[in-house]
Image 1 (cartoon, rainbow, N blue to C red):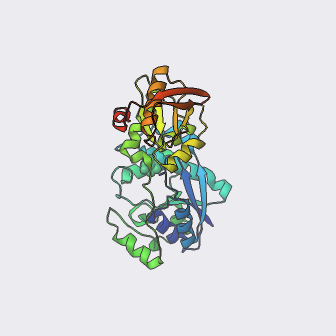
Image 2 (spheres, helix red, strand yellow; image 1 turned 120 degrees about the horizontal axis):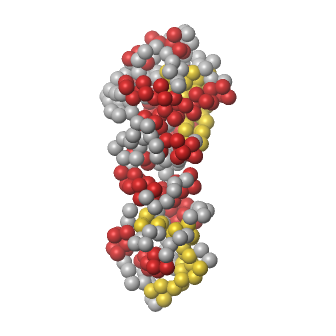
Image 3 (cartoon, protein in one colour; image 1 turned 45 degrees about the vertical axis):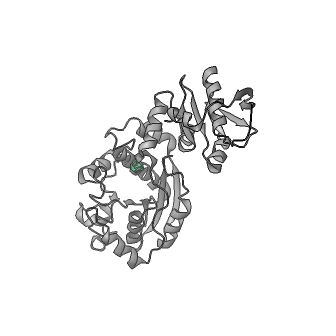
Length: 323
Ligand code: SF4
């Protein structure tokens, strides 16, 4: 028998999988990519955690569906920032349920702990998620199972409920104890988790949608570089370091032109629709971020167009355009 686990790479979902695997069930760890995971690469970490408990790791890309159906129209609203957690969870379960037939799984599991996160993991929120995703009875939460109604796998005897946990609340002692018992190593997740819970990232999305229509290919343009909104509406994205520059260079988005110079400095993107004034300002701002030591008129390329500018602005001047 197989189960699909909603897997985030965190300790709770790893422990939840282990509790089920120990009952002789094959577990496929399904990581759902909404597009808004942290920029740090968590893939190696997730694969490592799965290897430690003996689960198979698979990643599923739902970015397009997530933008169309969840991010901008959550039925249950947002958390503190741009995080539509209840609808997001429901979507993830809906996707996992859809995969059950294809992957040969009989039920779903998740690492959610009742009462751990005030908004998305209270009893009422969990009930909404089940209802909205049509997963009622099929979703087992091994970490809090004894504090919840029995699910199909427990009622059918596929799983021994007595061997599951009944954790409720924010205290992590029991999780630490289980991690120790199972000999788990390196379970601290790298990176900052979901960007939608980040105040600054939320501001960048709000700014974006007040000027443009958001699509999947716009996601990386919000994750990398300094983000500036120029007076006549253009967006300017300036790399902060080599990693940003490398990502920005690789972006092929019809909404943007690449801005480059022969000086030592960042790679940038600017809205293709930028006005002449915004382009002129962008050229000067770009020079402000180049390594000092040049004088006079400089040549910059905005896509195929060549522009010249003299450096008259500083990085301080750029601050007022920062999103
Ligand atoms: S934190 Fe992010 S990924 Fe997690 S449920 Fe909320 S919106 Fe979804």
